[in-house]
Amino acid sequence: MIDSIILTMGAGANAIIILMIFGIPLAYVLARAEFMGKKFVETIVDIPLMLPHTVAGILVYILFMKRGLVGGPLYNIGFSFEDAYPGIVVAMLFVSSPYFINSAREGFEKVPLHLENVARTLGATRFSAFLHVTLPLSARHIYNGAIFSWGRAIGEFAAIIMIAYYPMVISTLLYYRFSTGGLKESSSIAFILILSCFTVFLILRYLSRFIGRYDDRV
Image 1 (cartoon, helix red, strand yellow):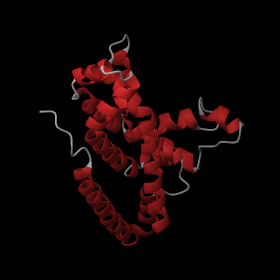
Image 2 (image 1 turned 45 degrees about the horizontal axis):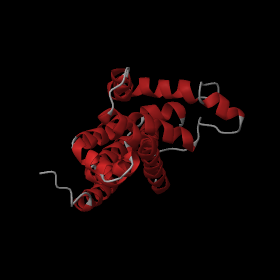
Image 3 (image 1 turned 180 degrees about the vertical axis):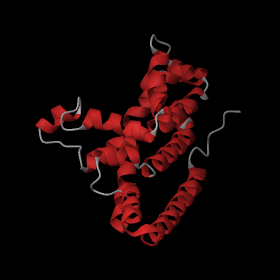
Image 4 (image 1 turned 90 degrees about the horizontal axis):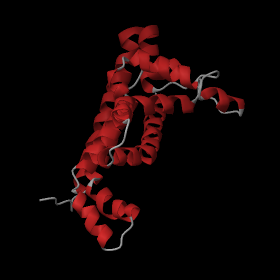
């Protein structure tokens, strides 16, 4: 059970790291740029919010199974998603991505554009202005988005079980124990999970007070 909890939270953290690498640039582009097909991209970002969890799982499985569009070529070079840790991460990444991207985008939109322009007039490149002006001012939104996304990721069940029944994340283990032993076998796991999540998120919320504390847009 402890190994399953650690696996779940670790896989969720890995999904968020990947989201930060690719989601922050995407969120910035959606916040600042106007281009043909922007609404289409925004709709793709929001799709996991609208899909039932089982449908999301089927979509992930179709893409990343051994004969999938993405999973097939990677499987041929020895990288498998089915019943493997990467499959868990991919499923978590898919279902949690809208929470992070939309939160980061909202943070970027709240940073006045003229602050970036002032930095540019002082000799900063576009990337330097983003790194030293926009990103710090959006840190709280990005942090909150990461928390929401991580919480969504570790709570996922249907999308994960479609692609990776093993190794068992905590939701899969809970379902297995309930199916085989009933409420008596599963209630203790549920209680420990609730307690663990409460403790972790309490710490994360406490740390949020130190994120963006110099943020003053008045």
